[in-house]
Length: 478
Image (cartoon, rainbow, N blue to C red; front, side, top):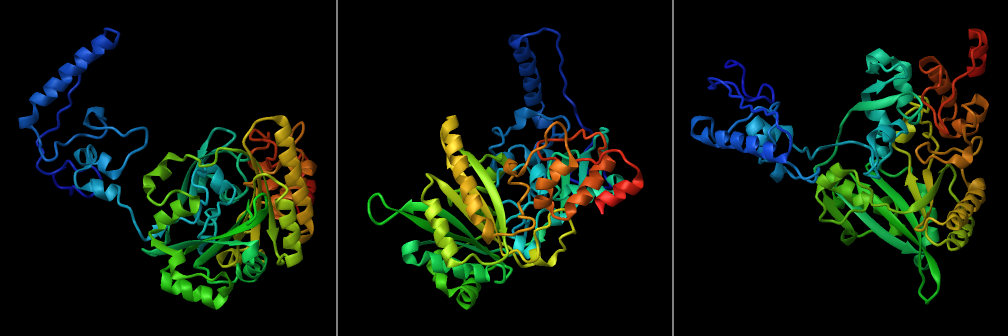
């Protein structure tokens, strides 16, 4: 113990220690009064021993977890709070344990409250997707509980199942316990901006131009468009507000040059730009106030508190100005509509459609997320808003991908079809090919092998094939 360096592992209690003391008290009486008496005795003994033990810090053994040393407040803690107990357990190693790198990040998570299990099983896209691909593209190992109750890692589950869980949708193959991910390099300083444009400011033409460059611009730049209804110039009038919300992996000066060369129509200026660290940009894109500490991300709480219905599309040919004007007419009919255009291209176009189950790659200019949002729980409200978004989706049919009309699995859309009385391959094909294209067949094959009894299932889970001879199964799959 004296020959191993204090920093060789986080456990630091090495050279110079003669022995460790464990203080222990137990009692048989029940009730708070007895508990308090014996704990107070232990605390008094601990205090008495102060001059005889290590100092600055008074060291403690982590596995004898001692909450008297200090606690966090339901996860709402900061580095300063943790310094009360961290150095006692880890001494100088504590800072290394909590070290926050400003030059590494992970390419996922526009919505910071998402559970990581389901997020990555659907693909996991974020504002660095054009540079580094999806979160699922950057997974290097996983732990999963399968239908037999076994805990498997990549080696023991095999490459087919490892392929399936990275983008094949949650709830079909097992319970995800952990992901091992590849961090990616990010600059110490990144730049963000949000520039609003209304129809009266030429919003339609600007958005049409954005479609020409969104997937072709420098892959360090992610510019999404958030589309909302806003109040018009006259009382009672409505207009469309487009918000160009962006992350650039670099500083303002280079960003301005990229925008001037590719998208001068937006009129971006230095005053529109804010430089910050990458982790601060995660908060910015998610919509948090500028002074929010990064630790809030550990809470996993959503800023979104409404009822909503969502749908999705993928666009491979720019929507004409006439098509956009028809879209505006339908948006102003709804109380609180929201559309988000997320740009593709860059690394997304370089990765094969079959690399993981997520197939929406080459040829996609941007993805559309449709949302209708409402506050009350009345059935008539739900019906009205859902009917509206279905009509909007119908209008957009001629402007988006076809054969199949693609959809993003993590915007689970039960309008595309649902399992009834079990999971049928024929039924599931109605949504499976939209979410996964040709990868759906391989997902079915993997499901049939690893969960033949269909233990893991839900409204849109991957089906198994019925029992049949190997030759027939091969014919159906291929």
